[in-house]
Image 1 (cartoon, rainbow, N blue to C red):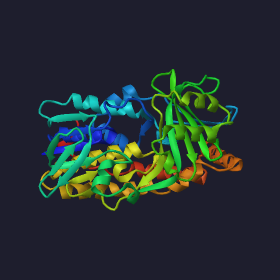
Image 2: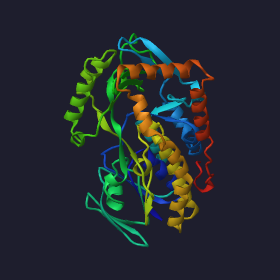
Image 3: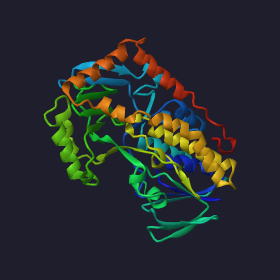
Image 4: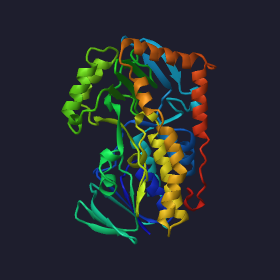
Length: 410
């Protein structure tokens, strides 16, 4: 069996690793010229941590994980208003016990792929390329790449993220499946603020009316990751226009205190500036014929859920496992993958609009209320709100994972 994976990010490389271990010849096509380093921090908790362990990824992750000790909420003068250590909620709260940059997690999987034994499936990477066209029937999928190359595959997996070109080509336009949730988010690398403004190893958060500014540790102590989110109506003119995106951020955040002026000064020179809408993807079915979607392309819950990477890893594990279980019946494999994962996706996607509103109060009074809620969570273990959140976290951690011996890690 020959399988094409569209997208060389976390979801794509995770499913490629497991498919190769199961003996399937796998091609990964990635639009970027090289694997992308750095990026936003992601976490592993509950079932995603269990998947990482089963895939043999934890040793590599441990070597590269970030030194994140918790989250501290500050005012415009940098004064601490509330702090939430990573140990809260059993290490599975807002800041989890295991935090790692997207680029480093991706590299852990690439290292595992490079170390696969000779009896694994054959591997081809096509960086700087993408699917230009495809045609499928009951027996195969014929693909033409942007480079002009053509090839035939038994299955195609789309793991390209929120704006998946494969999804648009096979299932329909983005507007059919994506839902704007009322905010935009951006992140980029900045020089690490002085310790007087942010203690080493802590994520600093400053909430302002209709916006939020955060600074997270990087693997390099000299740099940090700035995270900006803004609550506002959708603006199609922002798409792809970096100058307009940065102008919006300056207009919305100018005049705020803490390290906001330094962040705005560094933004134009940042080598990795990223900005996108906070959106959710909902699809009635994740597969069509011999094409199936994985990760954000099929079920993005938005960054507000904190579960994008978790769902990508879990989904990759389930999809590869089901393909290995029934290699001659892809329809059954796709249906089982969806049957197993959809309940968790549905649970994760609940309340995302409310999460946007809660994290982006529109008035100074709303900001004060939000900080009061954080202080309650931190200082009152038996408060009903904290008890409820603890139960929800525990329920997600109990998600049952099948054991696929045919794609078990070495």
